[in-house]
Length: 326
Image 1 (cartoon, rainbow, N blue to C red):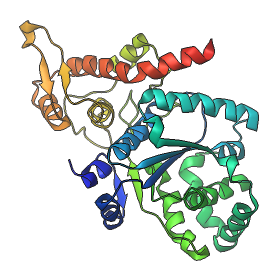
Image 2 (cartoon, one colour):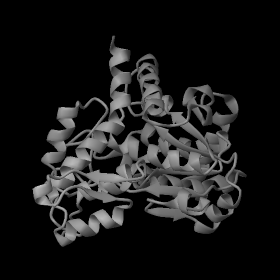
Image 3 (spheres, rainbow, N blue to C red):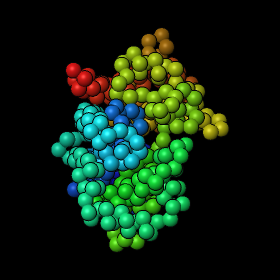
Image 4 (cartoon, rainbow, N blue to C red):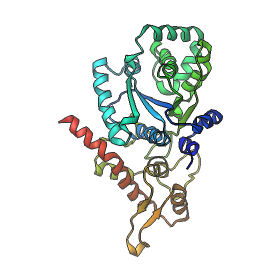
């Protein structure tokens, strides 16, 4: 797999491919980031973008993780002391999950977002950005909350972070797309270069295959889950015997195999009794998805294997949480 393929695999959108092609020609030392509001426990959404960061480290890039304490404060997530305690727990879980500590820089937003130069640049963006434009950028992140002034400042800060962290590439879930487009439009207006972006998919709800998997509603998987919890959640997951359910539904079991398991394991073994044909082995996602659709792979067997591999991914972070609670 060449650098461009490794950088862009399992993304929903690359903005723009030409710019990312240029990065891929010499990725060594290039700086890429994801920003996270500290929430305490890594869930499957955090882990999806972390998988992408591991790909980027494998391509030779340096990873910056913004532990966005000021953003969390603006979003009403607690005092700075509470938020920073939560952020430290997340930092340790990211490393336990598999990020290379030597090539991962963790930055608190408050380390630079309260400085005079940053504040003045933020005011420049405020002057140049309409209220409607800022609200559109924040809408998917804000959800159904009543808009506050902090909600329109939030995406402007995200745009400015990409300059102040000296980045070459920004990564986020597809729900960050509007923020990144605001960055590409507005940073040049105040004298800075726009950066390319990668957008990772949003997984469907585990139980229904509809909407998006969320840590605040429905069923999700996190590093707090025990082996038994993961088995129960995966065994109850929506998994029709096809890779393409009808309508707007997705197959979340296949999505997790594609975006979580195959990027981290060279081979996937589905264990089955000999009377049902014995074990199945897969070197890539497409072969597994094809076998599910053909009937060679039963959904129950796919779920059993998925639970085992997810548990292996979660186990180091789960152990780190236990250590932190002692």
